[in-house]
Structures are given as structure tokens and as C-alpha cells.
Image 1 (cartoon, rainbow, N blue to C red):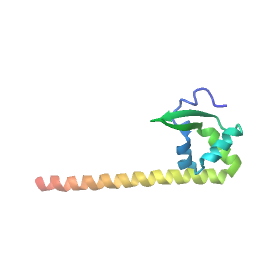
Image 2: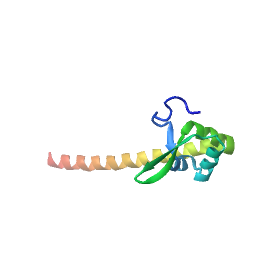
Image 3: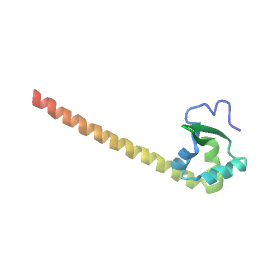
Image 4: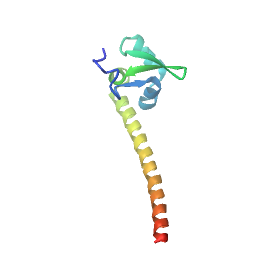
Length: 109
């Protein structure tokens, strides 16, 4: 069972689509966990599109039980690496913009 306030705590729940991106599991795997009673879920709708919201802690435990802890670590590491690469690219773009602005200001002086 989900702890008190777990459904409202930031980052404690995730949608099925986010679970697919972060952990590499498909919708059938999630539905199988729900039917087995391993995952609690709530239904939601955004812009008329239905989705399932599940508790992250329960999903991680279910992935470990069904697929092994290596699969969970691999999924988490890939997600973190993707976020780091995105942040590095954004910082490189910002640095380039700042260098261009620096050159412009130096010319004006």
C-alpha cells in the first residue's frame, strides 16, 4: 500500500509513459503488475487522453522482483546519463551565446 501522502509528494508517482522512458518497461508490464496486485494506480486524463499514474517505489520494487536489480540500475543510469547529456548541451549553447555577447561588448568598448 502507498504511504500517507505518497500520491501527492513530488516525484513519488509517475505516469505510465514516464515509466516507459525512465525504466524501459512497456505498458503490458505495468498492467501485469497492477493485475497481480503489486502496483497501485490511479487513472488520470490530460487533454482528453487517459493515462495511469503509479507509485515509483512500488514500480522499482516490481521491476527488481520481475527483471532483476541489474535491469533497474541500468534503466536509472541510462535516464541519468540522458539528463546529463541534455544539460551539457544546454550549457554549451548558453556558453556560446555568452561568448558572442562578450565579443560584441568588447567591440563597443
